[in-house]
Length: 121
Image (cartoon, rainbow, N blue to C red; front, side):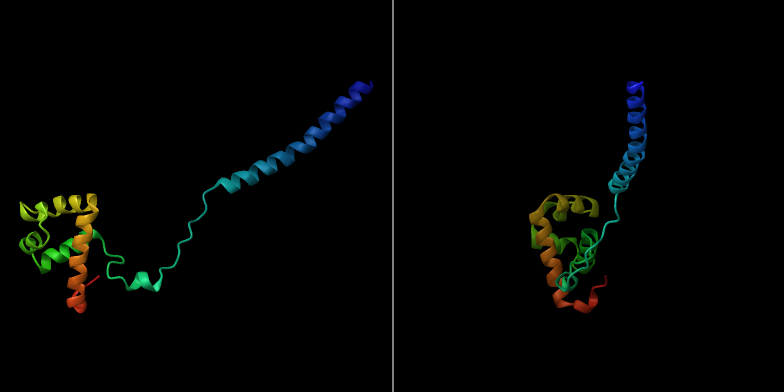
């Protein structure tokens, strides 16, 4: 009989412990849910940068509209500007090669400095 009572007590203890386990499981499940990403505020330095919020496609479109493909080809000596220039081929090349992208961004920054009011974001 003592063995039976001990087993019953063990079962009661396990039953009491189970809800605690379920509660901890639900708490860990809540913790594993993705939280909303908190975005940092842009610094004043970032906001003052003329390239802030401007996509590469917009930079290239504005340069082509302002200078034209021929000038960009002469100035940069990049093949995609010299031979059969298209937006698609130029953007693909500029996205793959950092030096070319930096070069084009520098030309854009020069254009913005010369005519700051003429550039629309």
